[in-house]
Amino acid sequence: MADDSLELGRLREGIDAIDADLLRLINERAALARRIGEIKQGNIYRPEREAQVLRRAAERNPGPLSDNAVQRIVREVMSACLALEQQLVIAYLGPAGTYSESAARKHFGGAPELLPGPGIDDVFRAVESGNAHYGVVPIENSTDGAIGRSLDLLLSSPLQICGEVNLPIHHNLLGHGGSLAAVGRVYSHAQSLGQCHEWLNRNLPQAARIAVASNAEAAKLAAAEPAAAAVAGEAAARLYELPILAANIEDDPNNTTRFVVVSGHDAGPSGSDKTSLVCSTQNRPAALYRLLAPFADNGVSMSRLESRPARGFGGSRWEYVFYVDIEGHRGDPAVARALEELRERAGFVKILGSYPKAVS
Image 1 (cartoon, one colour):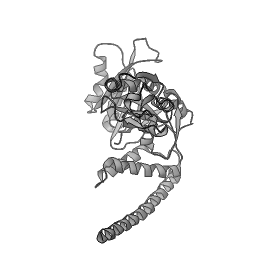
Image 2 (tube, rainbow, N blue to C red):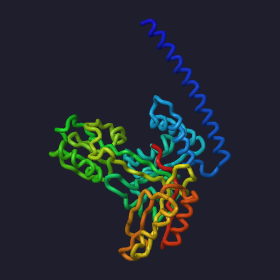
Image 3 (cartoon, helix red, strand yellow):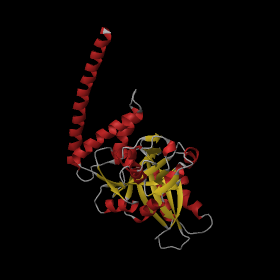
Image 4 (cartoon, one colour):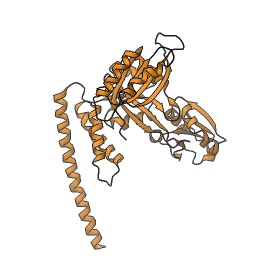
């Protein structure tokens, strides 16, 4: 026992010494970052630089911490350092406690001020008006597909995509009831109720399902009703101090929502990038094949193709535009050639942005 006590004392002294070194090094990093901000002026936040730092942290990680854990730590250090240079305001689809808030925190860390908006339109308006530096909006879900309003606004807005966030969506049943048998009503967003349909059928067949505007609103309602529960995420559980009655109740364990970060600029090359664009073509045989041929001809991989009615585009009611994601940055030679050839063939092309692929 005495030997164990001595060893514990030595180990704790070692941890204290490392903590002191960490504190010194973090503040040295902060001083360097602040000086860089003084030299650069303008846009301080560099999405491509942050992506490179996070990837390098994972590549150099010797363990035992996981790559994700290391990246979360580095993300918070960068977030705090950036706040010394510029206090960012990030608009997101509110209210507080939503998955959009979680996506914003995952991408920007804990330092920025978050500005919730009641709708996706409000997020775009906040950035366009200068009330927020960046906006975070959902663009597609692996279960339910594209978020149409986000796509429509990307077509009409001058904002560009400068980043993306992949957020695993884990739904939880929250409530004060203490047991499933006590639950008489379940509140949630209609989409979340659909994503937990089979679990609810098996475990709460007696409970009424009530769709509300957001999962955070569902949690707020459940917090005030002993016989009610909400389907929502951990952020809502913390915000409204609701116990988790059942965790990870989504029917698809791989359920993921992809968010994009919008701003007045896109990002520079990071070495592992995507480019998003929207285009149109005339309605004639093999038109789509000819439209997309430049990507194949130049060895550019296409990761997503989505058609959508051309709302507000000035065409007929049956005219469509195509949303395309490709691998690479618009500044890469092969991508630049493909885009130039596309412009020669398409009736309309808009580059929505080049940006780093989501990190972790």
